[in-house]
Image (cartoon, rainbow, N blue to C red; front, side, top):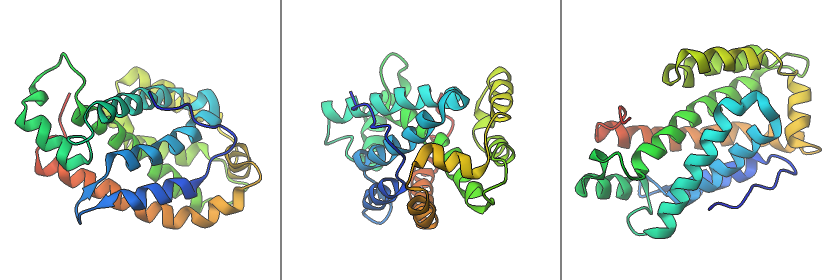
Length: 211
C-alpha cells in the first residue's frame, strides 16, 4: 500500500521533478516515478476537501492498486510500455477477475488530463477570480465524458462552492504559494510530455477503450 500523503501543503516541485525523471527511453514512462508525482497531485484534492470527492477516492484506489503490482512484479511493471507488453502477451487484458494495470493506469491518465487542464487555467486567473468556472470547464473538457450523468451533475454542483484563486492557493500551498506559482509553467510542460507519451502508448496498442 502507498503511504498516506503528508497533507502539510501541496508542492508542485515534487510533481515536476518526479514526472521529469519518469520520462525514459525517448517514448516510455517509469511507473514508480509517475505514481510518486501523482501522489502529490492527489494531495491537492485532499487539501481541497469534499469538493473533489468525486475523483479523489477513485484516484487513491488506482494509485494503491498500481503500487501493489509494482511490489509484486517490478520487472514487468517498471514502465508503461513494459506493463502493456506484458499484459497483452499474458492475455491479462482479456480478464476481468484480476487487477489489470493497463486498465487501472488508464483511469489515472484520464484524471491527469483534468488536473493539468484545471491547473493550466488556474495559472491564467487573477487572485480575485473565482475558480469554479475554470474547474467546471476543465472537467467538461476531460473527465466528464467518462462519467455517468449522476456523477457529472454532482461534480458540477460541488464546484460552485470553490473559492477565489488566492484563497485556493493559500488553502493547498500554505505559505508556499509563490513557490508553486513559479514552478507551475515548467510543471505543466513536463506533465504534458508524460500525458502525451502515455496517450500515444495506449493509442498505439488500441487500449483507450478498456473497460
